[in-house]
Image (cartoon, rainbow, N blue to C red; front, side, top):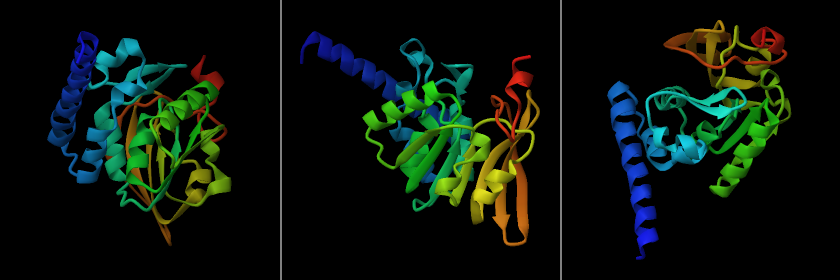
Amino acid sequence: MGFCGRIKREKELDYKKLQERMVKDQLIRRGIRDKKVLAAFYKVRREKFVSSELRRQAYEDFPLPIGEGQTISQPYMVALMTQSLELKGHEKVLEIGTGSGYQTAILAELSQEVYSVERIKSLAQKAQRLLKRLGYNNIKIFSGDGTLGWKECSPYDRILVTAGAREVPLSLIEQLKEKGIMVIPIGNLYSQDLKVIKKKKDGIRSVTVEKCVFVPLIGKYGWEESTING
């Protein structure tokens, strides 16, 4: 192996070590126990989903900017939201907020189909190109208002919302199957409660699992963009 080849291999090895440390220190120690979820976090390479300038920080314990005022969430929060969906492998999942595509890839590892809606077209296109290059064939991405869901492809077994809402959009509840699960941050612009919502025949049940801070869910049934931008 030539000198350049050795350098490349060493860099890849470094990322793998950072990834393994992240899973052990940030996920397992905080109570992420689902073995399939942990396996997905060992497999999906987080550094692929951030800019080259931020790759050294890809496995750190905080969110990172991905452009357009959006972020890739803290690894623990991605894991907690994923674990809360209780995925078995056969589910059809709706994700609201594609962002970098990292959470989308994790979901694709753990479910049958992922339908992801991203409000910002440039992010949707970038994520779509990357996920296709990484070999994911069970993901469909649409650029539009996430608060409306993706009605044409509904209903869904699971819905994951990766932005903070004032309340649960009724449109998303309607697109969730009976016995389905939705995970969504609910609160104000500065702080939210991560809610796990289960749809029952006689209504919905909701529990709070964690405090969190997400970028706002903008759209018809979310925050108005004018409110966010002053």
